[in-house]
Length: 456
Image (cartoon, rainbow, N blue to C red; front, side, top):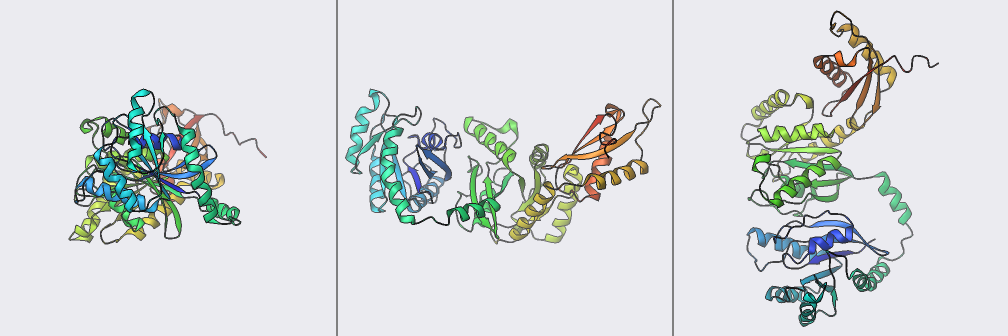
């Protein structure tokens, strides 16, 4: 089992840059302004032949109240308690600050195992700050540059004794192959939770996890990174992406919010199922519809969840109204699950999980060609395509070319002449007959004869 390293330090010392360096990808948002990172982000790091879990944390600040920085600090302290060792970063160019002294004392009091590193130590500008860091009383100081990759060999040498100690502690791994096989069979189902700011996405993920793992609060736009957490939810492994709230493009301001929006869109593209979370008091606003349409255009299976359901008074009437508006405003997702949930009381979470599993099964569904063409022939005979320029269109054959999402190709005498309304008729027929509710359906038309006509 890999050991865990939490990167700790005050804001803007380069924690996220080092995190990205260790995981080998730009997973964490990086910007010159302090306080960009707010939630805990985990990644699988590799340094030489060492593999371990690395945690990027929010910058430590000297606050203990219930303000946003105070809640960020408590999450970071939680990571310190859970990690096997802490990599404490200071800024070699800025030198040791009073805040660094305070946080060094906190790490000592908590009994954390600490490796001290001075970042931005490239060149002569960082030499004084690096030697100054010895005064923190946390042992030897490693000079590194996360931006340029300098000092990674020294960091490897500092981590190696700890890695050997944790390997000995974990004991014999004789059943590791069996565990790996079990993990492969139960590969986490990737879901992304998306929605407008302050819809309750992080609160919902915390309710699923059963712990305050993600930063929440009344302020809109707290989440910036697309944070991925892996969990066991009702006996099934899930990898859940909590994303930043998506606003209208015209309202997106500043570099960090643009990066956050791009991160959320990438999470949608990597997900298998997208949960579009809407506020129960303001569901199906224009931005909600755009987000749901984005998920459909990306070919993801979609579940619509309505949050803060505990605040709704007449639940039956509201449920009927929401379903009616859903069918009118999002016909491209006809039949997708609509699940009211309350993260505060936990109601609806089991139904949400079942809806995700059901729509994921549909998203992966394959329909036998013989059964598909039996329906296709009846559909075309029952409602033939309109004649174009006095010439009748001939639709000959259909087959499914892939799943995830279900995608079909039909052979036709003149594909360009088939009206869009007739294409929708065929898609709606497949959705109804084969139970393809809640997933995008792709239908392409090609010119030519039945490619399987001459097969025996």
